[in-house]
Length: 332
Length: 265
Image (cartoon, rainbow over all chains, first blue to last red; front, top):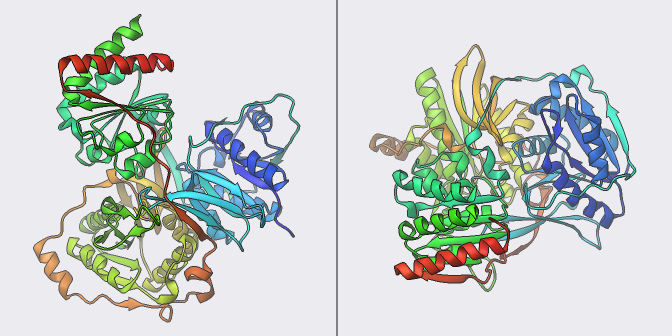
């Protein structure tokens, strides 16, 4: 049987479909149209509201395959992989894309091995090669120093994970037609050797990836005691606080604050870098921000290569003045 | 506990320079180091061994010089190392690498844990840990930031996800991939260094492992790199000098104006 169709892996949390699913629909619709084929959203969970599934169709899916069971409420690699492998075998899609999230980055490599498929991590661009119909997967590598385009010529499905926030979520169009298939989940697929016993939300850093405004701090801050300066600026802006790897490595802020290749990738409307030099690793995690402002004493700092506006000066002199001005501007 | 830690030797990416003309990486003078994120995996493995007994076996697939990475791990405190090296393995993608490592793990035999770094800093995929688990048919917990307890053939771990921490009970044997929060990696000791110089590091080739040579190396890998190019960066940056009090006032004023114009405040 021929492999056909483009699939996206939609994600839910506490039953609600997550934003990444809608971003993947933007990617998936584009690929399906170029390939002249259908777009399917697959989702695993428990008690997902009909409206949320309908929303996937409104945002571009031609078909939704939903598998629901109490065991699928939260991501667990074994039952998710077993259910996904089964529907991949049954439907045989040509392309499967998922978010490069904690779920996608775990499930996709596990499933790719089980179904003997090629998988490309963390793509920032996806396209269809006109002559062959192959999926062209472009991703940063070697610390973001290069971009590599990767193909999977002989294996199907072609699988890829896509960086969250690297594209806009698809807008809903009411009245789009599509089919919702409720897939039963046989008991024998739902077992596993991992049990989720608890969950502790992290209020402090939850906001970073979703924040519209981010203030990031780098080694220029010199010591942890000086971070109050950054907190003040972030508070005036209503921004979340992120950090470069240097700051996290020194223990001044915890790992979930880290922006960059080995931390979070963010695409806020505004990124303000304070005392951030702009290593390749850091740039890879923030250079797709809509607007970038940087404060650094070194006029040659790499961060200025991606910034629109750069204050060249001592952050300890600049930040208090800037914070005060922003505070006043917001009040008015 | 018998713990296997797969590690990778990578170029020191902080020092990587790119040839502006060709977009290729300039490898000359770039030091080869143990993947920095693997150090956290080695550290966790050593700590678990020290508290529960057992041994830490590091394995690395790579060219002959990757042996130095294994000796560095031994200098930190790992008990032994195995180099997995064969020309036919060269240019394997993550699928093929997972396949080879799984066969090496099979040859090692009985084990309780496989601990991996979150990803390697050169390839940056993070796919080999879960891929290895799939080939070995083991459960895998990724982004593990803490191991709370190990008892009765199960370990309780904390897993870092987007909005907090999951607490998972994972049956052993299992694969864990760990993040930086797990533990601060130790430096090699003098005694460890001395030991690492003397210890024998065996080399396993495709002959020693039950690998399908059709499924390894460049030709056996499902994915192919077809193009490499330099990313476009460089936006036009408006630089605002801020040496004097007056200049700082002006620069801060310009930033506020910029933010207002774009309705960011």
